[in-house]
Amino acid sequence: MSKISLKGAVLGYPIAHSLSPLLHNSAFKLLGISGQYSAIEVKSGELQKFIEVSGSDFDFLSLTMPLKEEALNLELDIKIDSLGNRIQSLNTLIRTGDSWSATSTDGSGFIKSLTNAGYSHFDRVLILGAGGTARAVAGALDDVATAVDVMRRSVRRSSAIAACFEKIECSFLDWDDLVDLSGYDLVVNTTPSGAADLVAENLPRQVNGVLFDVLYKPWPTLLARRWSDAGGKTISGFELLLYQGIDQLNLVTHLDVNSIDQDLRIALSNATS
View 1 (cartoon, rainbow, N blue to C red):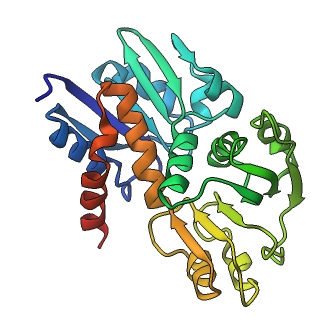
View 2 (view 1 turned 60 degrees about the vertical axis):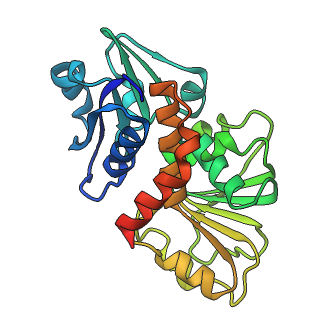
View 3 (view 1 turned 90 degrees about the vertical axis):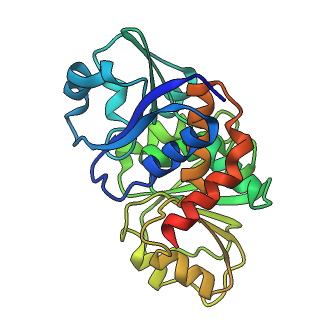
């Protein structure tokens, strides 16, 4: 039984749908940690003020849209690790006294999700989108992909996502709802809900690769449903939520949270079934 007491929260907007409180509070209970984890609405432009006013009330904070990039510019005593600086995206803030440390567990959670599904390498990968989650995915693909294309909506994000790779030189495609996805053995959708619906409508009749859609509610997304109908395999953002949360808790608690992954999966499954 642990003697640790922790208080955490996930910040973002919208936030009411988040399953992070269920995940973290279930982990606290399983690990014997006293404390509480909640979901708090913090809109774009409000993160600095929230931490100034309420940051000292928390031991750690999880960040979701639209705060993963905003956190890079906080005027605080904060140390961002090399990964966070490289991918320019943060989902974890940990407080020590008046100081904070920051990183992202999205990439490691992404890789663990693929590993759990039985995948270790891909020849051709396409990332849909180029935002904060896309950069975390890009930063994690170096060791598991041979070639990566990124289909972007905006040219201005290109240099930031290119810098996420250390071994691979990615290629860029302008957004095209008629893009041919049949040549990829992994497609990762990091766009907001509905943004890839026209891509879904134009899927070929048969696909052979894997679709990893980072969304988990509602599930399946239109893209995931059409992908499955065309014979492809899908992995949901539910997996990413689980494993990035476990990696976050490993950092915060210094306990072996991996040992309770199946218990956490059951807790999440019960909540979404």
